[in-house]
Image (tube, rainbow, N blue to C red; front, side, top):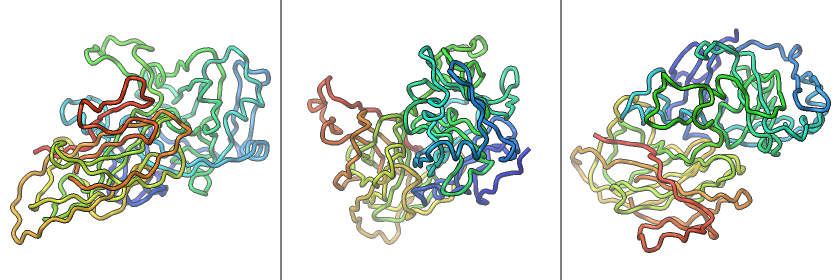
Length: 432
């Protein structure tokens, strides 16, 4: 059993054993690359203590040559590469859903189960090529030693991804995180990193990789991390029901100001992130504070790589009065500074509309804050920095020149053959 991870004191701990925690929103907003002590932790079982010298990786299944690698062999045989990528828990922002309908047995994750790091290791495709993939392979499965009591029956954690994703150049067997040996708390000595996919597919402490002609039969591939119809009787579900989660769904969130923060009269700085998984790129974020009547376009920070989210520099919006935002029911208050810069690996929005001073501002609930995002499905097209406009807080994101823009007039909606789509997830709520 590994010792508890070294994390900053104000982490929001959902469970101590196994360790599950996320940083406060303000802490996430402070860094483009998330420090290890701020990076969220998601575990289904006790973290194993693995001796890097004794660790072995076994690769087999439908391959020409089953091989076994020690850590030094993996590092010396394959060319190391570095990928900066955002990982996001599939339960990120679940607290917002639980405010409206309880989800029994699940942690109320806020917006902090999203973090970005520089990962260094060998390409999984190179390792698979050394073994010689068989032509009938459709999936590549990963197995780890951490036993999850919640599985039925209890079993080690595991999962799989399609062979197409497994052989993509961005997928790594990583042994470094932010320039240091991969810590045990984040999967050391070696973990899988699958950029653009839910964090559950980036299996930590990986010990076995199997090329096969079907998805993994592990509980966390067949029973958990699946999308089921809303009217499903979960007591009657069987392994394999629904659709397995893979690429991260487009989502966005306002990090500053936080729920419960008191705002003074005048301009308000708003910062947050938007993240579109797999080959999609966020290229625009708009913010509104008046229910969508007016919008201000955010300035996006340049993404370090295609595999990070977009983070937004502060958007300033004008308010004629002071206000106190209110917490969403069921979520915990989080510390936050309204002037902190935007978050780890996601869009950044900035615009200023000065507001007149108010000597004795009245207190009243602000309008709902939400985040809307539009993304582009062309991996090769980088996000461009949109021009800044002025208006009011709430956030949405959209694509560049070749794709449709964000339209408020129905008559201007893009034609059916447009190469990108509009998605409008809830970002953050400040309902009374």
